[in-house]
Length: 313
Ligand SMILES: O=C(O)CCC(=O)C(=O)O
Image 1 (tube, rainbow, N blue to C red):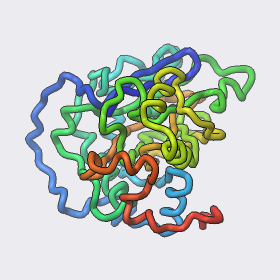
Image 2 (image 1 turned 45 degrees about the vertical axis):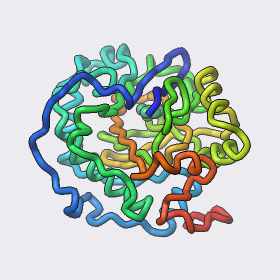
Image 3 (image 1 turned 30 degrees about the horizontal axis):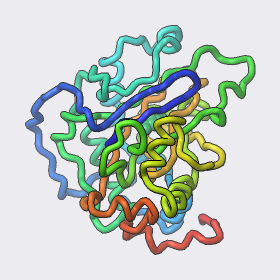
Image 4 (image 1 turned 135 degrees about the vertical axis):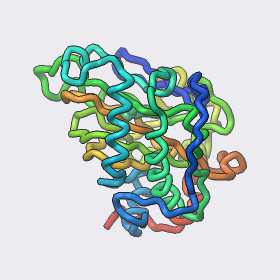
């Protein structure tokens, strides 16, 4: 995936999945991916209403998707890996947004990521349908981990609405600086490791923006998009208002690969710990260009769902 940037106010963050961190640990434990993955929900199923919601909005929130034990292990990884003291507000305010296990390779223990990836995959694959996504592998643990820490923003402003989520710009992953083919991915998952209250730094999305991207690509090429994102830090079309996703610990946000998004303003007291994983179709290389205009052409469990009327049920 190409290098991405998130711009929020004066901060500019860069991250990439294409440059694995230097660790070269060898993971000897084995996983049986053919076995049914146990989730908090039991066997993964989606209603037609949930599939419709995803198709319409480009994202879906699944509360209590990930089990507590797996989340607890990630919490330990975070606090064992960073110097900040969770009890010190000064520490948290001074800290900058960062991706643990990405360009900042300071993760002490990588194994706890895998059980969460497996659970995320089981939801993503079921939503897309047709057993068509590439499953995570233990060797992925040697690569980019995407554990994104969104620390509280400086000071609680007197104006409770400032800084505001509506002032931030978003991006589409893979179509900015460092662009390389095939760009992006099919579907991503974001897990909240702790509760993320409203204005607590949640993943912020532009609902329906995957359709804006599709409309754009009907009459524009990829190069113009990449130029716009590289120069203006946002896609070359209007997408309306952002929506910041709040949720409990273990919530999973599934989102479409062309959904515009960024990280939210964090006016809370806690670090927003978000564990991200991106999944590709097995034959993504063959049809990524078609997907640009037809966002669900290769999603057997979604493509025929009617979203007309927007009654999401
Ligand atoms: O940390 C977040 O909430 C957003 C991260 C993001 O925009 C990304 O990984 O592309």
